Image 1 (spheres, rainbow, N blue to C red):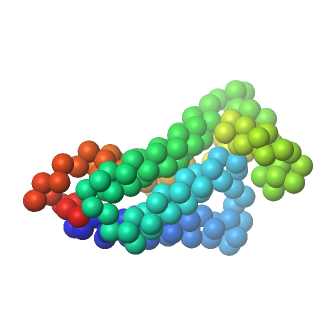
Image 2 (image 1 turned 180 degrees about the vertical axis):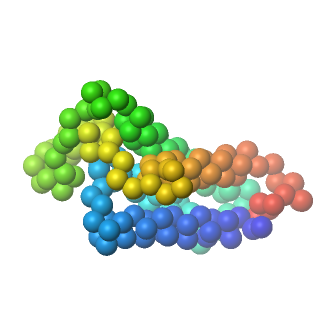
Length: 168
């Protein structure tokens, strides 16, 4: 499979995942917590890198550069999903207090404080509001981010063999 097609598939997947997130928010009424927002930004970053790579059609060096960017953005998203999964695993007496909504924080607090609060997570982030096949939303996000990190690492360390599935 060509690198351009792989990046296009990653872009379409990220766009679909973001579409599901917005559906869950606006149709199902699930309010995203700060860590959910950061995971969305992770999928947006991966999608943007993949769109640019798909349009560019990189050679071997470009494939490594885009692989590094893909690994970094997906890794950041994975760390946010992991943080939220950790918060969800805490006993009730150890869960941090719930915080204000993201919209309120953006209106009232300086951006540095909004980011610090979002990275720490709040009690809202520990609440499991939806499950599918036994996994919560950050569980599914983590699974997608793991696959994306693996793809990025494959691209980063690809040797360019002629029979490779990712030949550009």
